[in-house]
Length: 85
Image: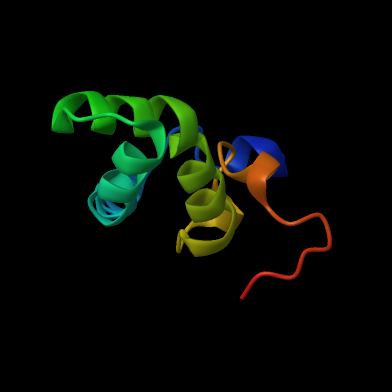
């Protein structure tokens, strides 16, 4: 097996990613609704997710996930300088 084959091909820490996404939504939805002029909570959450959830995924997968160095999905989000701890 080469190193690419040895890496997980699917997310093995999906629970961690989902928790990060839910926390992001809870923390920022009210400010997002105000900034966008959205009154409805559900519409605010949908708009926030559609516009910004990619940034949560990239940050979590590239910097926060405990298995990021052994994950094919996270590979493209890892810092180019290799400086993750």
